[in-house]
Image (cartoon, rainbow, N blue to C red):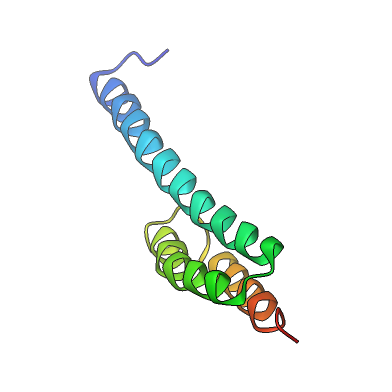
Length: 88
């Protein structure tokens, strides 16, 4: 357990950041799931709309440090490829 005042404050700050990051990660995963479900249903227009909504959310998570920038780019790229090959 933290003993010094600064260590106790750091613990509180970490707990607050953890809550915020959990919320951001959960929000990003929700958007990812919506795209996945649209792809699974086979509806290209719905999948494209879901991807259009999910892309800024994924990149925002990367910008805020929840996921790495390359991870976010990779996820967007793979989803975009799956949506584009949906109809063909």
